Every structure is written in C-alpha cells, then in structure tokens.
Image: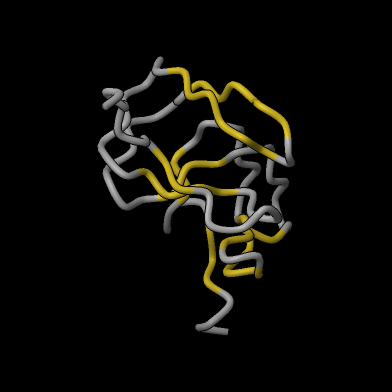
Length: 96
C-alpha cells in the first residue's frame, strides 16, 4: 500500500476561487493544486487556520467569492492568490 500524504486543501467545485484548508497552513508553504483543470502552484501568504478559506486566484474588490460553485460573498478588498479569505476581506451575501 502506498503512503499518501494527507491533502492540504479541498476544492469543492471547479468554479471555486477559494479552497478550504484541511489543516493549518503557514506562510511560505507552496501548494500544488488542480485549478481550472490544470496543475497550479499557490504560495500561502498568510497563516490560515484549518477549515478557513484560501484564495486560489486574484479576487478583485467587489468581485464574488465563489465556493460550492456559487457566490458566497463579495470581496471588500482585492485578495491575492494564497491569501486568507475570511471576514476581514469578505462581506457575506446572506446578511444583505
């Protein structure tokens, strides 16, 4: 039986521009991820706690944060790939 490394993030839907950290991620870690059907390297920019979101692409201020293939919020600032995505830079669409 092969020894497989535990996945670090979960990309729920191919349209998502965020992934969920499955463990704590430290700045400087480089993730090899399937983004948009291609392998992509994303460098972790911020400490990201397990179960929080990490950006897979640049999300411009005012653009949708997409999880589950659906918009879940709006970026309140431009979010760089590898950044922590949470209440400090996203406004929920459910509370409007």
